[in-house]
Length: 312
Image 1 (cartoon, rainbow, N blue to C red):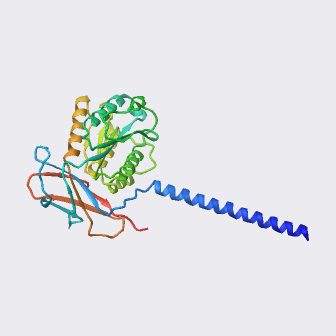
Image 2: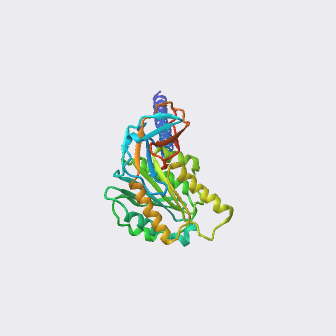
């Protein structure tokens, strides 16, 4: 009888600990799942749609002094009420992405110089972070308004594959956490993605959800040609044009300096507009955006639209 009671107690204890282990395992797996999901989703708290808008004249020069009443914003053809309007004094947050894959070996020095030139043009309230990407995406220098660049950048070597899409996604994630309304990603790459776990379409959606403008600089060698060159440039152009940025073809040294000077100036002279969409359906569908200005012969550049959030 005593032995039977002992065996029964033993059985209960074993069952109890088995239950605890099983429950912990389920909870662990659930947490892993949630983490994996969160890692792949950029959460946007506000329904406000922010449009960083560049307005230039027929000569390509920035146009200053426009008033809120001169702008009209349309979403899928329906006019929206502009609730936020900020002019050129608004600070920006930027992420520079340096391609350090094996194909960039001959262009690393120029890419580093470009990053330094960009930092030189920062205003006191502007902040920039630098990441490099090859097979992986790594932080080189965290967000700062400093014009000094970390010594780590001179230790970067060209090696490995190219996770371009993953790098842009990471930058969009980090910028989504920033309070600045103007957010931009500057990509220095030859555009040859051969490693990312995310598609270009998914990455672009994430960037647009974070109100990010993407500027892409083609760093491929001027000797590169053929179908691969066209395909790589096409990927860089797509990111830039759909987000309201600019694609810059392969530059030389002087052209690179001018290109970065122009980017900094443009970011400092944009108009920032924001509105709450009248279409509140959470259907995940594309919303096309158009901006009109009540003044003739102006060129207006902003993102083409965004994907509405989707109800789960």
